Image (cartoon, rainbow, N blue to C red; front, top):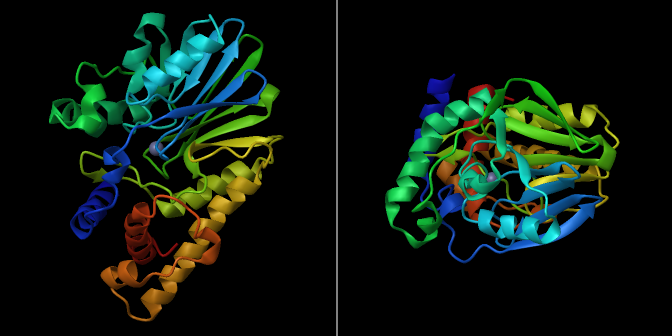
Length: 317
Ligand SMILES: [Zn+2]
C-alpha cells in the first residue's frame, strides 16, 4: 500500500509544478490573528491561509494545539499576553512542517509534547528530512529553521488518549490516515469545541499532505473520517479548522461542507474521466463549481484533481 502511495506521489510530483510545494513556499509574511472563540479557548488564524494554532488556558497551565516554527513566536507572544501560565502540553494534529516544527520555540516552558506513534515515526523519517532540508536551504521563507532544532514527542499514543488539566477534559483521537498518515483531533466537551486539524479547511482548497517528496493524502479515507466524526453527533458549537477562518457557532455544517466539497469535485472529475479526458486535460479544463468559487489558494486544486483522478481509478471509491 505504501509503495502504491509513493508511486502516486511520484506521478503527482512529475505532473505538477505549482502544486503542493506552495504549502511551505508561499511568499509573504505570516501574520497570526487571535480570536477568542469560547471561554479559555483562543484561535490564531494565519493571514495567508497557512496553518492555524489554538491554545487553551487553564488554572494549571496552557495546552497548545499545533506549532509551526514560522509563526510560533507570534503564538507564544499571544499566550504571554493572555496568561502568566506556562505552556504545559503541546499536541499536534499531524506531523507536517506547518503543524509540528515549532516546539523549539516553547522550550523554556518545558512542555510535554504529545503525538501519535505514526507521527513520531514521520518526524524521524520524511518530516525530519524535510526539516533538515529547510534548515539548510538558505531561502528567506525558511529563515525560522536556521537556528532551530527538531523536537521529538515526549509521549506517543495509538488510538485515543484522555488528558485532564485545570478542570477541562481533552479528548485526543487518532482518526486515521486522510490528510496525513495520522490525523489527530481534539475535543473539549466542557467548551463545546472540536479541533479538527487539517481534516477541515474552511473557505480554502484543501491541502495534500507532502514532505520531502512523499505524498500522503487519501480522499476516500478523508470522507470516511469526516463521516466518523459526524456520526458521533457530538454537542459541539464550533469545529476549528487547520487552515482558514473559524466559523464560531456554525457547528457540523462546516464538516458537511467539507464532505460536499470532496463528493462534488470527485463527481465532476468522474464525468471528465467518462468523457475520455487525460489527467492533464482535467487539470486544464476543470470548471470549478460555483459553490466553491470563493475558496482561496486555487493552486492547491491542481494537485487534488490529480488525486481525484488517480484514486478514482486506483480505489474506485
Ligand atoms: Zn496544514
